[in-house]
Amino acid sequence: MAEDRPTPRSDADPNAMSLPAAVARILSSLEAVLEEESVGLAEAPGRIAARDLAAEIDVPPFRASAMDGYAFRHSDVAVSNGPLVVTGRSLAGHPGPDQLARGSCQRITTGARVPDQADTVVQQEDVSLHMTDRSRAEDQILIETLPPSGEHVREVGSDTPAGTRLIEAGRLIRGADAAVCAAHGISTLRVKRKIRVGMLSTGDELTEPGDTLGVGQIHDANRVLLRSILARPTVELIDLGIVADTVEALASCIRSAPDLDILISSGGVSVGDADHVKDVLGADGQVQLWKIAMKPGRPLAFGHLHSGPAWFGLPGNPVSAAITALMVLEPAIARLTGHAYQSPPRHTALLRTRISKRPGRMELQRGMLEQEFDGAWSVSSVGPQDSHRLQSLQRADCLIELPIESSGAAAGENVTVIRLADCGQGRL
Ligand code: AMP
Ligand code: MG
Image (cartoon, rainbow, N blue to C red; front, side, top):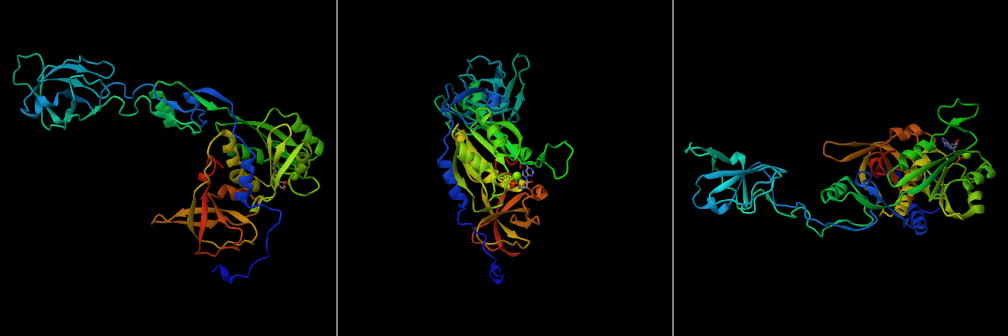
């Protein structure tokens, strides 16, 4: 189908690097932060564990009942199946006596300690009260359905015994990790320190949202856009504001910025008269990469300032800045925070609308996914793909990935899609 179309003019730039090669080059120049700190468990989810951590106690710490019912000795009933005398109670937090005379049982609740001399718990529903001898103080029970020996007893350490590795260094801590640590009595965790990320927008045309627009001005959308993509527990964001389009303004903003691990700027990265990012990076540091064979987002200035931080000069158009952040900044942030990055999963979807594209660079076009009755995905383009069209980003829930050599795709073809929910924090 695609072959029927005339091949469009190439969009290739001999100086542009493929996305995987660019990401590999960037990652090879970045190292994880070494410093670590202690945080309380409530603050731990979303942080990166700095050390392996082993369990010091058994969980559960005692033999506990998994049911409301009666704890008994299986051999007392297995043969005769006679009634058992209820001689005590073990409630959660209020253990009963350990002794259990032959032919007796203890009333027990879920989470309560099972007496040492009992080996099985029968659930309440499988028991009938047996009160033939009304002169006796204790109740008696008859087990209607005899459970197998050992039933409904949670053995010591049956969840996580002492010595189990609960957390490994480099792990992105989840709520379940924090809960496991809590169960083991651990109240703080050693995590990698947050990375410090400075953000600025360049452009004489930019004003803050909330300000009245002057002639030729637009509101800065990129800082709030990038903030929403980058904000996470491992990142401390430092807002450096809007910077005017002069070498001096940019250089002085950067020199007076606090200590950073990464500086992220948007705009001023192409070859126009007001594009100074590359010059300032070149003067105060080293440019290590410029231009990725990707659309949106071809110009990307990457390098390191002599003062230390890595600088990502993202394109100014908001869609380009956002997609570059998802594809390039995400792996870089993972690397710096000490976490193994996994690129978002790719899915196959049936294309519903024709897509035009020039060969020469990989494209990530905004699309809308739909799931068919049989579970298969189909996708349509959001329409015009100009990179100033923020609304296209708002409507999109996926990116349609078209390889460098592709010259478009026709309705009915299968294409590769990346769900935006799978990118970064899924918050774009
Ligand atoms: P530049 O890369 O600086 O040439 O900017 C490319 C386009 O993106 C221009 O139309 C800019 O006005 C626009 N742009 C740059 N920065 C921002 C921003 N922070 N918010 C919205 N649009 C921007
Ligand atoms: Mg500009």
